Length: 548
Image (tube, rainbow, N blue to C red; front, side):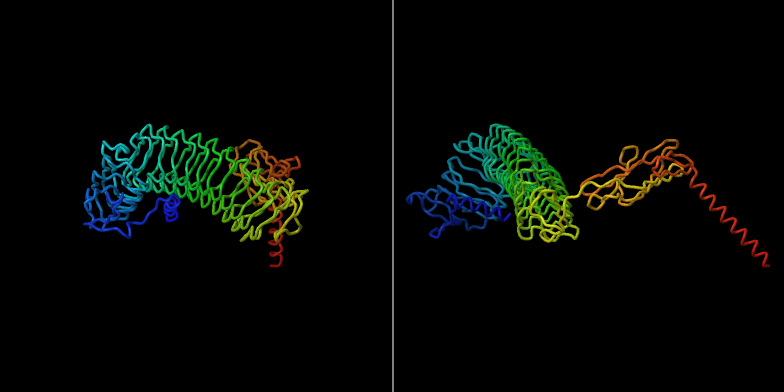
């Protein structure tokens, strides 16, 4: 939050609107600091030194009408419960009542025609901002401050609870206007709204749902950041830009649907959405800035749109559940820390157009087993991979330049493997309705480790196994089944083995894959063994009696 508060301050400094809290030359009368303005014809309240409670601002100080509440005049006065403003007042400055956390009510007098920004921000107990009906510049609807024509939402009181239905006709929701309204649970925007300015809803921690206007073209910087209760969001068609930090730290956000037409995602626009598991990125997106999904610890898989030119720095940093990602052919560079800390990422294919990989781009990717490069060897920054496990290998394709064998950049390096051959010596032994199938490794593993085998029953895969033996139970008596096995390496599934067949029933059966099925073979063999054992036993008994 501190960094965002700094942004508020900077926005005023840049705009030249920030002034001191009070004045070095301010005088004091009663509970108020003041200074004379307008050539000494009027007074401006610059500070408050009273004990709080219900405060009445006088209409006259030092014999001069009070025309202004200066910038930050009551800022941080947490002992004030209510304030009554005089009818002589015409202007209220920036931050005038900001962080008056126990202020519950206030009414804007008839003659106030100028109000600064962030006037009532972070007033968490303020439930209503009332406005004199004859005020020519401002209006209040359900305690929310608007311009007179109710086309611009200027300030929602920080203590407002429940549902906010923004009136039809409102076109603009101003910057910071609903910030830290921590008791709002739902917001509905009419389609008349075309602009939601920066940080408008920041810190609305109880906000669980928001209906966005269908006429928005952008979601500005930080608009919904730190809305920790927001579980899902439907971005309307027509939105082209998602601004920097737009949904950052929305910790309950689990899914996001971005429509066709969105073109750019700003810095950390979904950063630290730690419950985000899936996101659809449309093909219209052509630019994704730094850290868009940084710290999204449950995000498990992403397909990037074709057309993005680079993978920006920290784009997926600390996405600890990201196990797979498809990088489009349009990408020419992977910048620093792009995948740093992706501890579940187990393999990666780098397209041919990538010519450079930045510092620590894959640092801490401890589960990474291989990186396959489809083009020439790229330039790499310092520690582009770091903390890798012992099994990490580099692969390249025939015709690629710049790679060295058996190592490249200190890592094992070789040509990309091919699919494995078929498993051999497939044998099925069955008894009753159960069957055990065994086999041997393929003669050709394709140049890579066999990761597992897939067993097929009548053309349908029924199980994966890392062993070379599997038992299948409870087949249907009288039915004939065909089994095949295929080996899988990092490239994919290889050739099918020769089939073996089995007819479920009571007999013991064996099929060695050579086309013949010999019923009773095992049973006869077992009988022969038993007969030999019996004869030997008789022999020893007779021999022993002969000695006796």
